[in-house]
Length: 220
Ligand code: PMT
Image 1 (spheres, protein in one colour):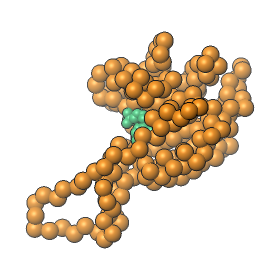
Image 2 (image 1 turned 90 degrees about the vertical axis):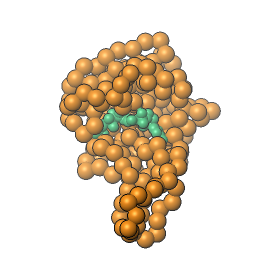
Image 3 (image 1 turned 60 degrees about the vertical axis):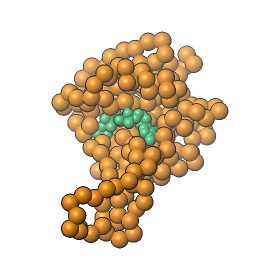
């Protein structure tokens, strides 16, 4: 305990965006920079954990002392997580995973035609966090929720629906926090309580969030 509250524990963190190929040169993605997930990985190493960081494409270096697995798509992230989950004590889903992917990736670049409309058909991706929480012996699970409205309701809905131990909600309607910024603020919910972590830089916030996770993990 004390300064290294996760000493000896295995922590897996997903971070960054996923990319879902449309054709050989195009993809669907989002604005996640990976900063929040990488800050969590660094804070977890500092707290004494053995850390696996499963990351989409970002321009950040892996924090010293963690094992990084690089992936592109949601399906690859799902596979990377599933293959390594067995000894995990705490799983943190910070990645902004595409909920849908194009139903097929065209083999050749899609050419512009005379038609004014082009229709893309999307199919659902696996829910990585949901599948981890549904394991017969699940680790402690912390999810993230990026919301633009009704932040508390939507976050608590995800907590219950995905059967998570804890969820950290980002109000991404606010400027200068959440996606890509260096600062963030979180509202954290669990079955019997909630707390707010006010705006600060992502590393500081990650340290505070992991202290809370360590305390709840030990209660469980
Ligand atoms: O990367 P940054 O620029 O620092 O930004 C950080 C962040 C805003 C991306 C991050 O803090 C955040 O909020 N991540 C979750 C983004 C989100 O919208 O998640 P969601 O509401 O779509 O999904 C809820 C949870 O399920 C998340 O923990 C997500 O990782 C997980 N999920 C979602 C879909 C899916 N197919 N598999 C999943 O595991």
